[in-house]
Image (cartoon, rainbow, N blue to C red; front, top):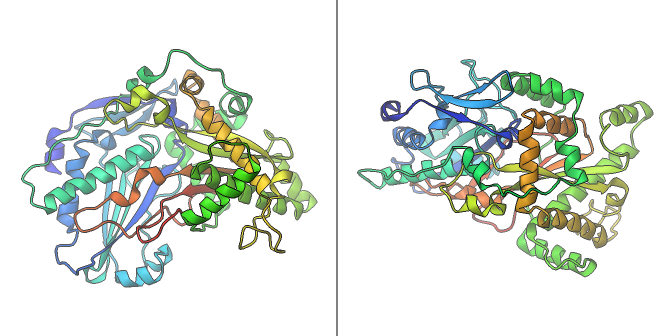
Length: 472
């Protein structure tokens, strides 16, 4: 820590619309590590901590304070004389790793929760919104370790989060192997880099994206008026009043391939990726459930639900698909790894009535009465996802960039749409982040997962654990 305090410099980082468009959410993951050979030198606390602060030297922005001025422009201010150091907590648990393993890594198996944050960024015990939270739980007899780490989307996206975690693990592994010095890695935090990577030409937004990015809402004005800390508290309290039930499902690559073949028989699409299939399948499952729930509502409950969704037609379902713009901006990929916000949600609208025909309740791609899955419905959903992905060109990204940066409160109006739309699902694919590549010198994690309850109608496509294939 002393070396970090000596080397850190005062600096101000101007944030942009890409940082705030998803800033309402945290990026929290829990990693489970097993001491497979009962080594007394298994991930020792002093080495983890030393590697953490050595890595922080390469990510100084994480020791800054989030500041929003009177014009709603946001900055991260790193003041070496008044740092906002990350939250770093160490605990011990009487639970043996084998118990957590037998419980299939159910978070409820731990007597203390590894997760120390809510779904949205809020102030910590010292009144500051931390830009990095870490909680390390050492299990009984040094049998294993549970590591929780979180960053708010205000400061980075999943790419930046994964870059920090992999680098922390790499530095710790070098120390474990006796390296005398650790070479310095460079990461880019200057948001001007993203501005320079945008093409000069700009494609106008389509109708769907205009509804997300260009429609002003009363609730959006209120949300933008709040400070980030107050907005986070409001969202966390709202989540408590609408608790989400978390579920983890596993699908093998073979099953995905089978579905892709069935969809191909019903669709003229030339290319269907695993992401297309999984995104369409999640949208259809949630949409069909929403349709079934609405049919069983009473008059008062139905009226209240309609009042919450003033921006969608009665038969519409919104899938907000989270996309990374880096692959669309070739200039950005050629530069020093840029770890600022580069994701946004692209809406795909579908008919609830059509989704209800898919038949998703059964075991073998069929409904509860044994009827076969209607692959044509899934093919329609895949076509919508593929059209969205193919249409996300660099000039289209430039159009979104203009929309979210010309008005610094744009993010709040998009958030208002998400909050007032009950018939929706937000889908993010995190398989590209190599979550299981975080080896601190004593082996890769056996299990990595988000918190048991995060946000309602939120789905993450995650890589399967190392001992299985497919997705979860």
